[in-house]
Length: 152
Image 1: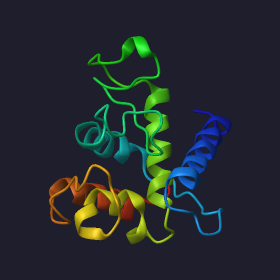
Image 2: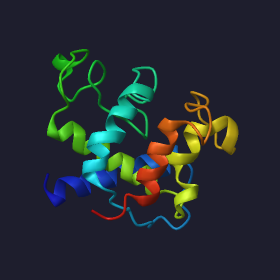
Image 3: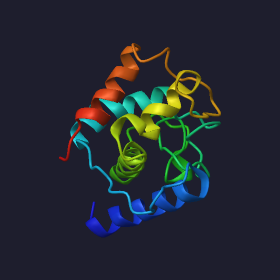
Image 4: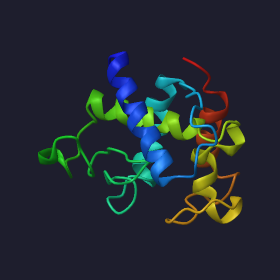
């Protein structure tokens, strides 16, 4: 996907973050572009399983909005079909995930890591805790990507 299109996704994500999420202190945090291959192989399937319910993050009005098989799709005619994500859908999910992984400055303060542990980490998450705690294998997979995903 082109740098301009990625920039548009980032701009939209930052607008969503500042309008609906916790405020960004100086409004100019740097997005950490984490490993795309790891995202595609491990994190996207995790989000499809845990976060992409149409009542949660498979909604366009959510700041952390996701596309997923059997849920929201760019082409509304593809909604609820069990087929792989398109490249544009995967890119959108990757970009918003990197933005949320970068929000908070320090990795440990990342919304992507704090919100799914809502009951354990003092960050409001309307869906409650997604993981059983930091020792949950699924959470550890996410934490490893956010912490060690590095710049691709």
